[in-house]
Amino acid sequence: MTVPLLSSVFTQELRKATAPLHGQLEALPVSVSILSPEVSISEYLCYLDLMHDVIVDVETTLFPIVSSEIHSLNERRKTSLLEKDFEFLGFKKHNKLRLTAISEPVNSIGFAMGVLYVIEGSSLGGRVIYKHIQKVLGLEADSGAAYFSGYGELTGMLWKEFMTELVNYELKNHNGDEIIFGANHAFDVISKHFQGTLEKS
Image (cartoon, helix red, strand yellow):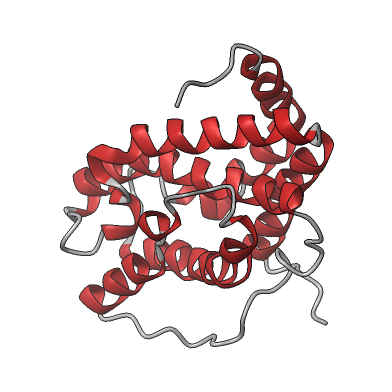
């Protein structure tokens, strides 16, 4: 499957439109700590704990919505990777409440695709974090760093495959605004979740 030449127009627009909230998320203390030379196991587990809430909701609620457009969803499931890391590191998750703030306003495939753009992008960025965690904490894919290891050597291929499907979907439906809105919503909710400022319903 080849990405249409026009894809560069939408992908550049998507990156530009989401850059402010993306940058805001990356600047949060929780996000900064994970790439610190002094990152601790407790900080690492805090990050994984927060992301577990996000991933569970996305896979439970949004995967079924985008299943007609994304054809490798089973390969993209990461809840089990997070729980594998928890088990290896002896971490017991105390907060059992579902985080639904990401999926609650979803009313279209386009919005859901925008959210998934953020989640899949985090898998790409996770490879950088994985190398850092390997170096600083000595964790490997099978010993506490399964989540950041993600798709391993398939990460680049799966990212390109996702972006191809996203771009083809936008070209077919002309709903770039919906996709961008969904992506910015995801960045905003994850940022608030990381800061503990999400409003409780």
